[in-house]
Length: 493
Image (cartoon, rainbow, N blue to C red; front, side, top):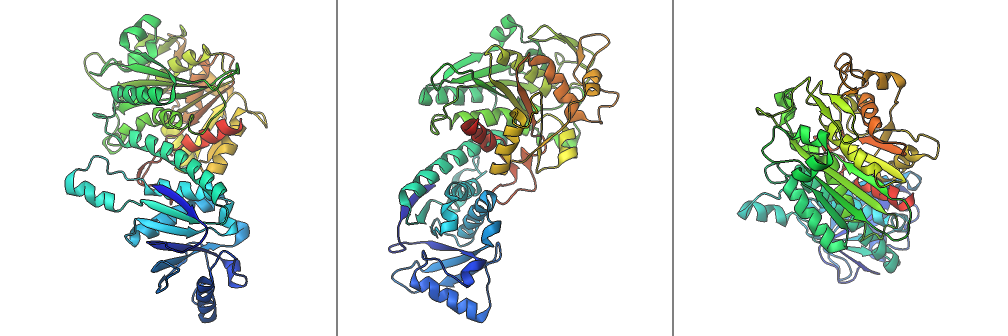
């Protein structure tokens, strides 16, 4: 999607979007042309439109100074308008363009919208995302015709609007990169695919890239990651990307769970859930999305991304319930449930993260169905060991509030830690006795054994990473949740 700016409505083509706040019934903004003000007088007199949120009114126009089609789009009251409102408005504008079969549109940027250019354009580009990557021929052409190609922002603050819009495109595209990876089928988007895209990022942006293949993982002792991949034909792999922004500051380590496909292993998943298990690589996809944007956004923090990758499959070599494995940090784990595999690969990655002496460690993962049961599909769970009023967890939650990637802090109690102790090994990977109680907290309690003395946060996106009930700027399937919140966190920490 291409973004342009200009100061007036002359020589525009396609569709003109005219945002309308309820207050404009009494005082139209200076940004409106005289012709637009005439329309307002008309529908005010006839009382057919008052600018409620999502209330639209369309006109066909015969004018040399306006496009032939325009839509007044209701924005509600000014004092209720927010960053999230602007993002939703952008999504609605994209939908209106597609309904009108218009690949080009222009938007009148009133003073209220000039405050939220970034969020408006984010909503446009996130909604413009097409899931149809694997269509071919005429089927693909039909989908491409629906895509919004060009957006013109009509504003008297062109330079500032252009800067904010371009930043929005970087962030939205980073989110869409993550969505592509999550939506991608496991036979195509596998560990080798992640390696190829990481090599491209390293080449394009100068990131340091380390790829730990199976022989290297065996030599180093990544017992957790290797154990989960035992039953798969494709071997485990860990990818490490390093963004050096300069200076000697401690890095922030980001870790994303990368289960390419999750059958559940011998604790096999039920049929009604297994078809979506290509989405279990959502955490890993978030890390790739973020690294596609770090250099473009000139993020000044040193950042390390660690992506452990494995398939949780079944064959004669697969991990069994009651097996005992030795982790990278030397701790032993009794496998009580092969479907609690994500925490096992994250644990080794957290141990690796400790080696960077980080300022913070943050892992993000589709970890537990319990998080989904507790919080639904609008809130991700967050747990950690730095829960002070200005601590790590609060900073991430605040970033999520602004980006509409909401999070809710869950407790990490001593009883949760006790439940993760094994009689035959140091730890169990799942508390089978009361596993249906506080499962998200117990998953975090397991991970806590691998963080050393570092400040750490764990984000459980099991309920938010993949959806059948999308927000206005989303589609069914992958949401890319976590990319925008963690970028905002990195910008402000």
